[in-house]
Amino acid sequence: MIFGRIARHTGSSLALQEMLYGFIMALLFITAVRFDVLKFSTVEDLIILMVGMDFTWGAIDAVLFYMIDVMDQHRMEKILTSGKSPEAIAEILQYEFGGSPAGLLRQEGIRRVGLQVAVEPLKDQKGLKEDRRQMWVSSVYCFLATVVTLLVVVPPLLLFDEAYDALFASSVCSAVALFVIGYQYSGYVGINKVLGGIFITSVAWVITLVATFTGG
Image (cartoon, rainbow, N blue to C red; front, side, top):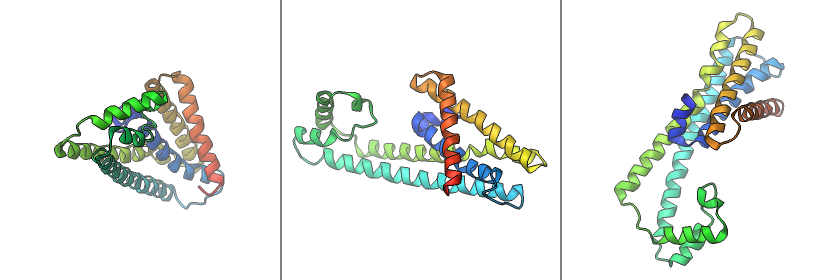
């Protein structure tokens, strides 16, 4: 499945995040039109707006992710080569483990991990360069995760002559796709897949509806 292929390069949580962004940004236009918040002349105009939104913000996310990852790499390299004692480095690193497996440890465990990292030799420049290449690949897949959602949202808009039917069909197809993505993601994190699919779908639609009426 597409989600699994993207997740292999970005991580499952980031893949989910970017795909949710893609759906929510596109569906904002769908719901805005359905609730008469937004006027449009033709379906083609609506599609151009959605494509422009997803491509633009997908590209922005990709650039920012890569830039921040590279800056973080340089920051960590500077800390680990600072010449400070392992204890001092471990003290700094204890705030860097959030979101990683080490972040689940108790304080003494986090400190031991920090001490171990502080005394381990770093990769050479070739290894660091390869890491940056992987960061770039990941950022490209983040972009793809955002824009691939258009393959679900857009086609139904072209299959119906009646605007209401087209908008409704696009909404239904998006809801089904969101459920499938949530179902797959739940398998990664080890929770009930059906409940996970329902939860992700519900959250995406709640955010979309709220954003529609709050200027999103």
